[in-house]
Amino acid sequence: MTVKNKIYSLAISLVLFVSCTTQYAVVKSNREEQNINSSLPVDSSIIKTYMPYKVKVEAEMNEVIGYTDVLLAKSSTVPESVLGNFFADAVFNQARKIEPKIDFVFPTTTGGLRNDIAKGPITVSSIFELMPFENQLVLFNLKGEDALKVITYVAGRGGQPVSGLRFNIKDRMPQNIIVNGKPFDVTKTYWVVASDYIASGGDDAVGFATPISRKNMGLLVRDALLKEVKETQAAGNKINAKLDGRITKN
Image (tube, rainbow, N blue to C red; front, side, top):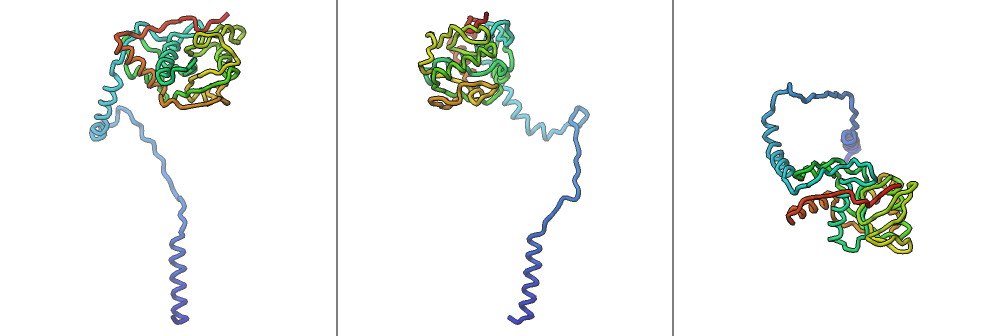
């Protein structure tokens, strides 16, 4: 290659290199909002696209899976509620089918109860409205001192949905604690189930940071509720949750 040709080759390479590394910058952008309201013409192609899914989802959500003889209400004048007791007992029943040694459950805070369920038929939608989150159930083996932290937290918040656990609240502290039918003993260990939200410290919950063991149960909180209602219906019974004095206050 002659010197002249080498110069041409170098020049072409530089041009190609510059071309490959060209940087672009935004010089103009537009933003426009489109209001969606009844004044817009109907787009039949969009309706045809989503309608099959809408019909399928509505059919699944409107399926009646059980009945309740009482209004499952969140509001209450005492530290427990009918809705909270139904919720916690349902999770306790279903979780113990996976792990029978569970002592008590604390599956949600009162704030996690999103919707009352009216007396009468219970649909899949009713359960989704009550529990719209994808929270998992987590099984903990806790030292007695950590279990006491959980119970003290529940008492300090004026009561939360629990099952397998009974106590009285006095001066925001628990007293006369009964776990799974037996007096609480801080020297023992306890098997406790909570949602992953509570277990991670949601709503400032405490007691789950240093467990002896921790295991995901592979069951969504919502699925536990759905199973409980369906199984109650299959057994020929109706939901009949009530206040039972599991948490009192004086």
